[in-house]
Length: 104
Image (cartoon, rainbow, N blue to C red):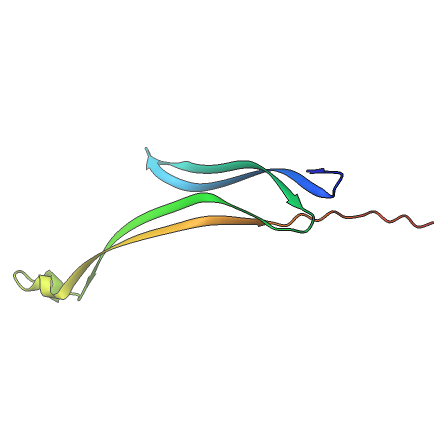
């Protein structure tokens, strides 16, 4: 970080979010999302860094054991569901200038 003459702070921010991705030949890949930026902020103010989104779709089946597996009437005892989840990672940064006091 750099401090300007008017006590503001210039910062280069870099945020990485790594997650386990698809598995290929028994080896998991790593999904990396990255945001880089430079900000100018007043001493003690908060900067919010966003832009890293995550989306996941999960499929599942709720069913009554045994009854859901019966032919013809089994569909009455099971329910398919799909869930679409979305999330955003937010990073809050609050820089503060620490003044050095000299005592003799």
